[in-house]
Amino acid sequence: MPLAPQRPFAGPPAGLCAGCAHRREVRNTRGSVFTLCERSRTDPAYPRYPPLPVIRCAGFTPAGGGGRVA
Ligand code: SF4
Image 1 (tube, rainbow, N blue to C red):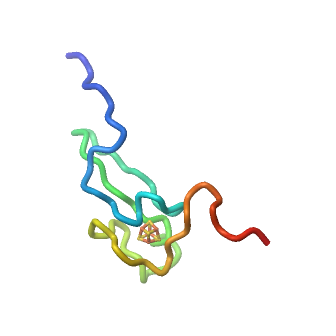
Image 2: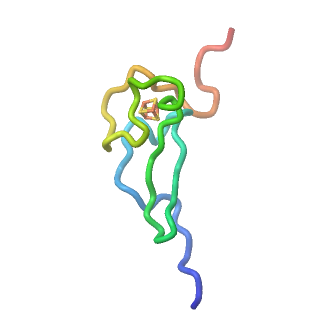
Image 3: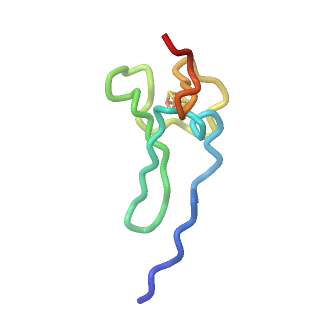
């Protein structure tokens, strides 16, 4: 069976998570895409799979090094 073409992101709109450095995309064997919050590994205040879209989040960190440089 041929493989389905890959789409950039097939999940629901992620809101803030979409541009956050702590977001990791997880894809299951059926092609569903989930947003995993890496902050959940060290801080129980953050859900492993936050309900989307995330509108407000104190842990948001811009992806790509857009934060303040010391
Ligand atoms: S820290 Fe907040 S914005 Fe960033 S991935 Fe986790 S839940 Fe989403």
